[in-house]
Amino acid sequence: MEAFQGNDQAMTRTSLYGTYSEATYAGVTSFMRRRYSRDLTGVDVVVSGVPFDTAATNRPGTRFGPRAIRAASVTSAWERHWPWEFDPFDHLAVIDYGDCDFDHSQPQQTPAAIEAHADTILAAGCAMLTLGGDHFISYPLLKAHAKQHGTLSLVHFDAHSDTWPDTDEGPQGINHGTMFYYAAKQGLVDPARSVQIGLRTTNDDVMGFQVLDARQVHRSSPEQIAELIRARVGDNPVYLTFDIDCLDPAYAPGTGTPVPGGLSSHQALEILRALRGINLVGMDVVEVSPPYDHAEVTALAASYVAMEMLCLYAARHKVPA
Image 1: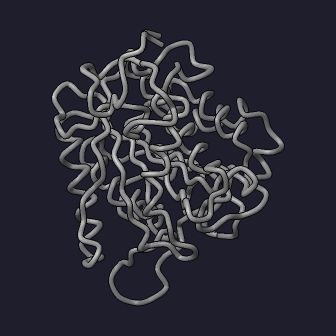
Image 2: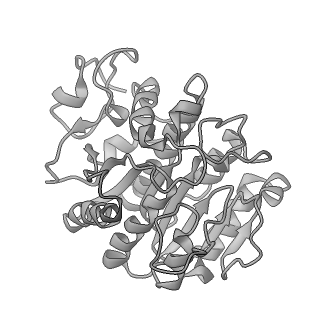
């Protein structure tokens, strides 16, 4: 942490690097006090929100997720992220790009709008950390990332597989329970090099994904689970997606489809930390629904998950081994 630099750093900071102190209870709440900007020059990672929840199958409200995660993040924006030995913001130029723009009155156009949003950022050579929004947003994000990196390994933390096909005949739907079915069928991700962690709902067809369900996570150490993930993905480009309902409702009540028996915050964060070295190329945190949250604990957990992702990205791409 460096010296005090004044307030409203989201608007006034002069450098894209560094961590500076600012009152946690005041100021413009960008993610981790990063500068709000649409200028992609020299930027390593773009944080942006997708405030979309039309694909939710149960409780809505995740359209408010990006705002809540940003607000929660400022409680820890004054210090280096614990327990990492480096500050990712000393190595990564990170901006908060704001939110993806789409016309809520034209829902069928939203997937293309999200994909175009990602295309613009990725074409500039930036990586993306995306804040949802319901989990459907991962599908157009995967389409954009696959254009840049080829077929991806998916590392997917969730209570649900999200590999159910649409049951209605007709065109592919906009549904937060179907998108990884289509991502696998369309070659965006390779199930043979992908893994799903924390699942605790029934889907007998795993479609070739390795499943480390919640029981296996609870019976193993975080390091053991991380080693299985690392062995599965190898050095393939990884898209890391974290549905906050992977956590037990005791730790993340503010979500649309909570399922008891999930991971603790400690387990999830320790597994993520133990993934150091994977070839991370894209990441998102989704399904935070503030209307069902209590004392902002879900948004806070999501902000910490997002910071673990930034540390993983920096460790692979910027920090000397």
